[in-house]
Amino acid sequence: MSKTALRVAVVVAGLALLGAACSSSSKPSSTIGNLPSATLNGSGSTFQKTFDQDQISAFTQAHSGVTINYAGGGSGKGRQDLADQVVDFAGTDATIPAADIAAGKYKGGTVLYFPTVVAPITVSYNLSGVTSLALSPDTLAKIFSRQIKTWDDPAIKADNPSANLPSTNIVVVHRSDSSGTTQNFTLYLKKAAPSSWSLGSGTTVQWASDTQAGNGNPGVAQVIKSTDGAIGYVDFADAQNAQLHFAGIKTSSGVVQPTLQGASNALKGITINADLTYDPIDSTASGAYPITSPTWIIVYKNQTDHNKGTVLKAFLTYILTTGQTNASQSDFAALSSDLASKALAQVNQIVVPA
Image (cartoon, rainbow, N blue to C red; front, top):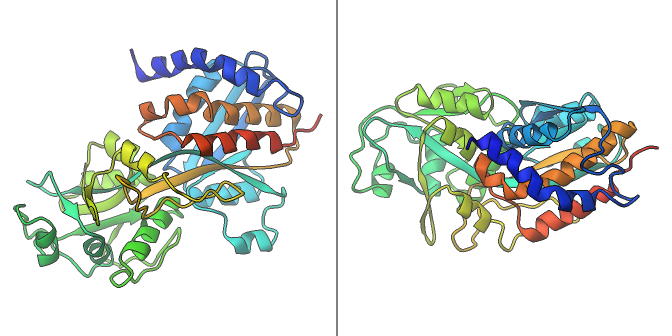
């Protein structure tokens, strides 16, 4: 059975839960089988795009009058589009800068964060003859800040004493767009290798002039795949789709590979803020993959269109119920039950006009 067929089949299992979640007057006014016609438009994070597209496909197949478009473009673009009120929802892997809120940039009012899934940010590479690699935080920081420029550098050899490393030049590949993946990857380097990482953390940073850039996670994956000696940071789903090799990350408890279980482990013991933001980066939980990215769908609390608002609430409810059970089919890990429950309860805060 194809992945799409499996996802659609899972819809049936979630109907009762979704219907119950949409039944009261304080929740979406429509049941799963009685949604109004509406078109929702979203943009933003390419990290979550594979998951979003899979959920959109299953959800809209169950609701013939509903169309949902998600354009990607990077977390920064998504946040800007929501601020400009040209989309109904945005995907972001980074929180809205406090300065943007203080400046009243979001004209639609209060913004709500809905965590959806988590996944590893892989350190993907293309090095002829090398299919297994482990890298320490300091080595990673020096590679991406161009302090280490060849694959046979002593620091990489020290991390991989049994590997046959060539003298190939290292080609660093990064995002060209404003990216939550960039922010979370550089935040990891800032936390885990503060003495070696000098570029700071943000959705964009000042990369060296001899590096290469790709648009979105798929763009970075493509550059890596086509360039011998390349290394870059790519979400797990796109790295899998491109069939890239990715490095294990050295931690105090050993080398941890980027896996969905490792991403789930990174959620253990996190602090969930009142607005449902949280930070799993450089988690010290047992078995945690340290470069695990959060991701959210953000929406305005006060909706302006009845049909769109109703469908948006139902779609978020679907993601936080049925979507959690089939997340792994898209190469993402489900939220912890506590985080998913809090997010599901928050759907009630979305105000839909009569």
